[in-house]
Length: 337
Image 1 (cartoon, rainbow, N blue to C red):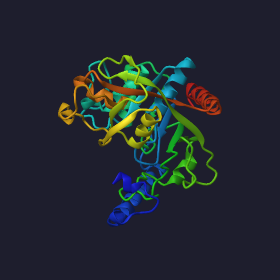
Image 2 (cartoon, helix red, strand yellow):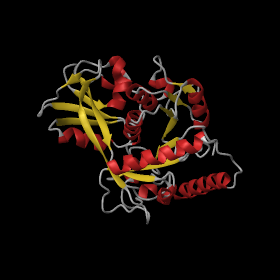
Image 3 (spheres, rainbow, N blue to C red):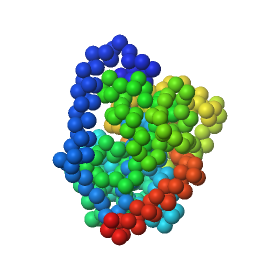
Image 4 (spheres, one colour):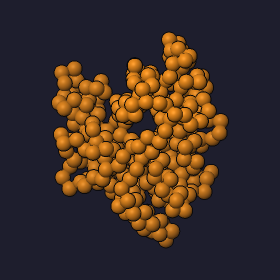
């Protein structure tokens, strides 16, 4: 279905979902209206809350964006923390991600965020409860909400919308006939719109939205079992797997490094890997994957399994403006405004 979503027009197999998309649109609008009329209340944290999200389903680059923002904040001398939904985790929620946490309990992305960022991470489908737990258990002076653009119960001071430059908004239909959670016009209300890669000419942003381009860059290969650096030589032939929102971006990144891809395997986003998924893969055969996948296969990883470490880069103009806005919000919070 995901492949059909990202055609330029609504394809025939999705026509039957049009009534459900209409219902989804109405329900989402009513939910937003309830918050705007204050029939439902926002909870506002005593520290700045920065929401990083998108209007489409998955695969835009939110997780590396969150990690890069965390590193920027730490360089500024701040003490950031992260709240995340914990998609795929069994709970109980809310919970702090700790040394003994597993992807099965807290979700794959929160586990990866905690391990890579080194900052406190709280998870829970109700972001407000996760944020309260984070403030109770850790000394943080700014909260980054991973994928919380549509979670209106959590009040936010800064919103950052991420758009996949290559896939854009797909067929521009709402779920389930298309990939949109909200109308693309929602991006007119965020503080910044960042496009992951250049925006393809066929994709149009709403009028008056001035995006800034961010870029995902590869940092090198690491062995899954022990995280050690490894050189994957040009001309190497490998099986490449991906259980992420946009696997084709990762496959292209691998090929761009001169690696010969003999086979690709696409798994659902947040897929819970099992050793039996690789019963027909030779022990000597290289298997390449994303860091998100590596978190879930490490327990049964073989010696020739490697993951690609990546990082998101931002324009300096964005980082300067973001820091200035965050400082303003922090001062307002301290004064109780």
